[in-house]
Length: 636
Ligand code: WT7
Image (cartoon, rainbow, N blue to C red; front, side, top):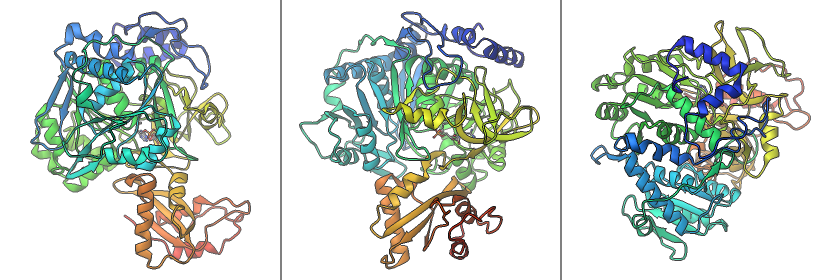
């Protein structure tokens, strides 16, 4: 391998085979393309998949030196971040690699002056502005651990996450401009801290919009009062490959969100390797990922993957529909974007709001277009292929998860073939398999089962923060010696994977994972709710919507007013993304003799399917099914 970029089908096949026959040799070669201060003692310390895996242990380096310093000599004047504001009139901002390094160093020195040290946790609650990238990299530069919380989460959700990882510092902005909304950010942080976040010593506030905010002189510090005046040299903290880089909370089928932990070395190697291969980025290209930095896609494919590769990463503050539904395409035209990476939900929403709208823009710069976060349906795939890619751009349907750190299954554009709705083939280094419910591996092609991984890759999660056992039981104990993804998939006659969707109690709403238990817990906070059950249903735009069945104490008054109160409770407990699309008020839920809710029936009814409930002989209260059907809400 001369570079870590694969350039032909023959090479893909050869490397895939090598990665299976000699994984250590394969990854050692990939890792040699980075700047290490000291070489690792082992590439990988286990030959099976476990949460105790160690990659490149003993290797010493700093990820920001690889993102920034090593590009300066040759590419210091290359734009690293190209920022486009919410309002099309706002001038774009360019930060070259040289400028970004200098900003990061100043911010890193400011963090040090606040007493932040290696291993301390910093919580980020920020809009999509260049300073979020600066501060994340500054955090990594001094060896602190970032925990970015999506700025659409509520104060409650933010407080839970701050408390779980005992963050010492919160970095936020004053407000957040999104579309024609102006969202208070600092206010939510204040509210969260007042909920007993005792670990928080300081709040660093970036003045993004110039509006006034409440101020606490003991805790709050303006960014402009402490960052710009710092020295712009900051020696990076030398980290071990297995030191923690960040925590990112994600929902599961039970309990509170888990803090997925990624470490420095494996994450660096894997995000850069996948970025270069999946997007086939070439020097001079402009790459744009529309995700929010609060999700794993923003971490791996707006910040780390592109910057590790010396790429130009476009960062967008706004929303796809502001000022109109041509905004994405206007930005692609303006910046001559070469690789564009977005979510099926955005594609469907834009297709619905103006089928021919993209025709107004020059999209001829595009070379590769990508999709992530949920299964992409054929209609959306075709529209994306024709209207955006003009049948010239391969679509990379990339399958991965917060826990996987980077893309595991995806076409390689121009190298492997593509088929609508198929994430297709595993990247070299990735060993997927399908198993049946007993964990027996399904051999051969044309099979459908539960998607697992048989062998570790460098950016697999290392633990769930503060609860290693939970990590083991959630991902590594369902099936022996396998990592279980929670997804169902089918393998076609040529070995391509098609992801069907979650098989657990996780709903994928617009590409965001929401645990049914979390939504139920929120709904149950309403004083008149006795019990609730939440399921997903197919939604035309969001992929899945949220359907809630609620048992009340009968004292709710007018039903629609009550429904509105339920939505308010969910917004307060989690955030607007978790609001149910439908709330059916019921008197009973279908339960088995052991007291378990039979969700299968609830899912069918929410889908509008009133027959074929399967075996219902174990139901304690079969009579309730008729009532559930009669009260079902029609959706879509
Ligand atoms: C879940 C992971 C990966 C970053 C964004 C979401 C679903 C993800 C695809 C795809 C079908 C997909 C899966 C997965 N998913 N990509 N290309 N096709 N489904 O990260 O929040 O951790 O969610 O998203 O169900 O398990 P996440």
